[in-house]
Image 1 (spheres, rainbow, N blue to C red):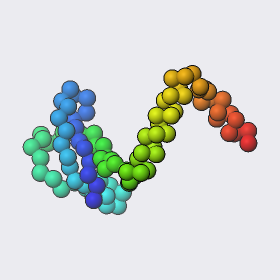
Image 2 (cartoon, helix red, strand yellow; image 1 turned 45 degrees about the horizontal axis):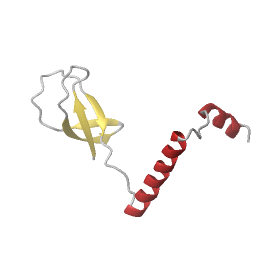
Image 3 (cartoon, rainbow, N blue to C red; image 1 turned 120 degrees about the vertical axis):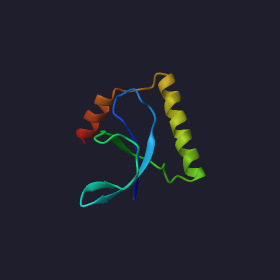
Length: 90
């Protein structure tokens, strides 16, 4: 079972609705009643239910992110292209 968020594409309507779908033979199959007009096209977005980090793992993640931002604030950064080139040369 897959929960998806759906909204009419780029119409200015920002109301979301949650639909439940199953993947069968590589296709999303919805069996949800709707009041949308026939032929309405929707953008479907997979709902990320979050991660599996426990409190200690989340604290380590947040400490690492804070340290990284502090490095950026102090100007200790390198262009990503240079890092990628260095990794490729190994």
